[in-house]
Image (cartoon, rainbow, N blue to C red; front, side, top):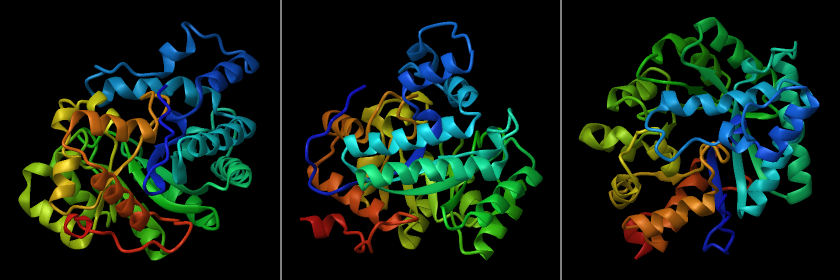
Length: 332
């Protein structure tokens, strides 16, 4: 895995990072051995998606083994703590970690126990590194509205530790509207919300995320470029886009890095942020994401600073009060 750790002009923020996609391969190997889980191939082959994965449905199975070993409080605490350590190595000063607690009950762990375990791991990592974190809980599109309500209720029981609610999954196959109740509950309690959209499906999924679920950030959102009215809405309301270039190519959301819209959208004044998505599944770091953008697109140092300014402003649990994001004109 590339680990670009050179000093950056501004502190790094990673707003879109899935815990189960960011467990160290060595840790997965250790946990599998401790738990008596036989591996059918070298662990890296089982948890790292190929560059030419091509679709979200072919990308998601690489989360299966990490989920299988993250079914105990101890495993969740370790994975969360190590992820904060990896943020620190990557030059990240603030990282938001998201996971779906309802997927960690195969051995009897409750959602409350799962959230508490991840929160404890994040706190241990913060104490060791001084990296600030935010915790997001994910509802899942393919699950029932009742299951999503249960996740939202769990988030509210842990509002001292949980910074936001998310909806993840394949928006092409599963609409967001059935999960409205969970997001209305979160909004009523003042909990920030983001929604995966504009990744596997087009602009309509982003309109739904904004108008039906009240999303203030969009996970990925790379397919917005064809809808001028949507671009105007995103710019006007400051709805941040959590783009993840390596992952966006792997899932087929964009054809390649040269076609990635991040630089163009930043130039048009949209609040684009750059993130890792799944550090292990995509074999990446935030430093690597910026390095690839610099090498492959019309990316500039000013764009990197601008993306980080947007991320600081869009953070759900910012370590300090963020300054208003700058525009390209202000950078010049």
